[in-house]
Image (cartoon, rainbow, N blue to C red):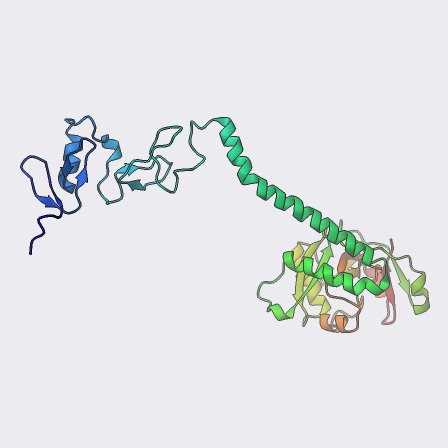
Length: 304
């Protein structure tokens, strides 16, 4: 069955075959796929595309995109208004045009950067506002837990730790790393009535200078300290004989978390309210001699 009304005859000499998808030169002549290339390369037609613009290895490669490293092409030429070079659809409105004037380039860059800059400014203001609200809440002891929960949400966004830990086991804190390896002075209290006389350290809810971390609630305190040291790159010689030992202190009041009982689990410390998830903790070195002088009833506070 023939369709005499479909397709065009190739106008190349000695061809004249019917092509249902012919290619038309700018001079108006129609050619089949094979002879369109021959016509353009013959040099007889001044309107034919330059040889560097022709690539018939694929149907979509005739006018090559001028964008660096782009190999796409089009049947129809799409010239840039500025540099008068052909670009594919993807790069047609790209900012890389070498002849675009500086004012237009600056305007387009500003249009792209403005939303990003506005987001950072708003986010910075929001974080400062949250920090200030937490700081105000901590002025009342009744609001410490609520403030810690808000603080916890911020910690979870940036916390680091062993990725193999299941999400339901993770317990979050923020850690202030020791500035050096020198043993810090402490106050030892044997009488609980004297605890109220200890000068407390006010909490700083700002995460600046602290490392948000997570550990397993099922871990012992000793294992949690080892993991925090590994995560935060803190020198840890707790398992060796040496002049100092690492201990965790609450930043809120300088209280040392279970200085002699490293086997107690994190979930037990939270259940007994010695720790609250979201607490800001201070990791510091204390003297081994001080540790050896402690008994189970001793309470240790970091001296301000």
